[in-house]
Image (spheres, rainbow, N blue to C red):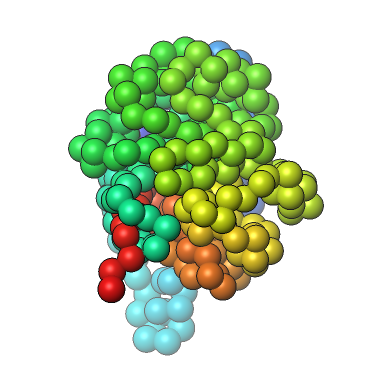
Length: 341
Ligand SMILES: [Fe+2]
């Protein structure tokens, strides 16, 4: 379906080359996209069928194609200025299509990232698998979560944690979405993300409550040598209030689950051993990640903040559109190990 859509859009663009030359000054195509984008969002939100899903994906891909072309045009312009080489428009269109296809393939790949942490509070190895930001929505939600559940199972974790934005609202997730997660029979803890809290909180809560997944909404639980604390997604001040109400057990290895990697310096002074977050998608695609690096101090990966370990997942799924570039989806495996001498 993707290839057909890409070739279709490619041919449209090739056919309307003259329009493309001027589309940076808000040509017909831009106006069409800006009109189509909210319409398909609304359609996908209201009518949840395979057909609306395809239309939605097609328009999103067309939008990415057009947006990408800004960067490609800019690149061609720089080459022209510096090297005095005029790259033919057809080459640019093919280059753009290739990037779109690579980006789509990247959006389908899930890599496993491994992290080991030693601590005197740990006597027995504990394996935690983190998934985050799947943004499962519409009729594809069940198959997406099943695909991830299979990957989780291979890692043989003691605990599975989900750090928010498991679901998204553009197309209600299927009622059987969590079937394969239930079948794992692994203790699973979850915190809500901003996308669930926006328009989907009641629906998502129902799916979670009917499953084996345990939501942690400004509460904490003990799990063997661990203390798991989960904060509901909100702003800095409200996260602070939520954390203040938690009695942190200094004897246990404390793990904070919080969707957004914010309020980090403050949290690092509260005796938390490990903070697990997501939300940023690691920027999702190059060169957008370079821009986000300026606004997110903790964009993705492992950080040491004072005495606290922080891991920010780059996301196990894609946000809004099936496109990633050089920043694949990830499943994070954290091994907590006894202190070595
Ligand atoms: Fe988020």
